[in-house]
Amino acid sequence: MDTVPIHLRGVMWSIHFDKKNITYPLLSKRRGFLMQKTSIFTSESVCAGHPDKICDQISDAILDSVLTIDPKGRVAVETLVSHKQVVIAGEVTYIGKKIDYKKIARAEIKRLGFTNKLFNFTDKSDILVNVHEQSPDIATGVDNEGAGDQGMMFGYACNETANLMPLPIELSHQLAMRLDEVREKKIIPYLRPDGKTQVSINYVNDKPVSVNNIVIAVPHNEDIKLSKVKSDVIAKVIKPVLKKFNLTVDKKDVVVNGTGVWHIGGPSSDTGVTGRKIIVDTYGGYARVGGGAFSGKDPSKVDRSGAYAARFIAKNIVAKGLADKAEVRLAYCIGVKEPTMQEVETFGTAKVSAKEIDKFAKNLIHTSVRGIIEKLDLLKPQYKKTAAYGHFGRDEFSWEKVE
Image 1 (cartoon, helix red, strand yellow):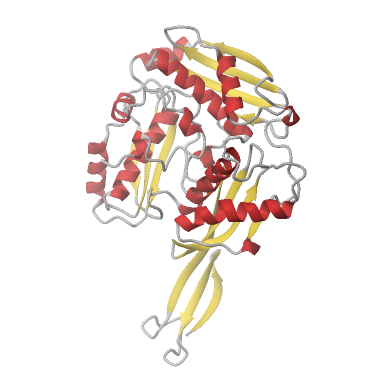
Image 2 (image 1 turned 120 degrees about the horizontal axis):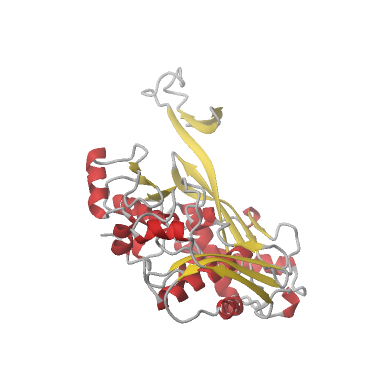
């Protein structure tokens, strides 16, 4: 059996044929011809100390504080972090005791490891707060159980992993979690807060088969050589994560700190803003996502609750064996209770009729704003945990439960 690579319509194919039994390989499949589609897909994630994720976690910590006091509180908070400074702005409306926004922000910054003056950003940095109440025009529609805004949301699931997430983003999240773990537990004691991960996966006929390459970026103490950082990251981060998935990667296909030097991470090196990692937060670019971010928004904002409902439906469709892949599409109009669109796409992998899948989806959850909030129990404080390592793929959240 011989293999010949060819390039057709932007995709690399591998053609396998048996010289002894085939005369016209491109014309006769029955005489031994087999064509395979090969491709590579890449996703990235970031550590909890990444500047954008610092912002997401501060914003969601504020949301959790409001919901603890008033489960029907309205929150739309944005955070910006930069060199020695934090800015918190947005709209918050609730009934109850006054919240100390600065105290919440300082607690999150400290928890994430930014306590060293050398980082030029710590829990003692200046904090500016500019928060006011929700617009009465928006409140009118939300008070009547309508959507808090217009927009479209997507949910996705596939059978590539046990938690029905695409493999590239799942591995990227696992690597980011492990980077934080080895730093916090002093397994690699010289690492500093911040970090990014990136995984490229080889696919054959749309199925993941192996790791193509891994890229890691992580700040570390100045007195540690890059060669040691790389060997420790491979041994104590990459190998343990890949082992859980029965995967390996060659050392030559791993890049750690591609510029050769990274000592100071965090906001003094790279300004962060809430909601700037929507691809990391969802499916790593593997599936479509809506235009709205999640963090800092209470569940009356369908950017968040609609995306959670769409994932809930998609995951249950795949978990029940109704399809190998599912994308759920929702759209809403501000002030209107019901979605203006609800569709399911299974990309030719459905095991039952489209009518049966549509019926299953509609019986699973009512996708009005009220229906989503009640079904998924979204009024309880739980959102800070979502603000790092992705909002999907972790069973601790209600939208990840299989009915």
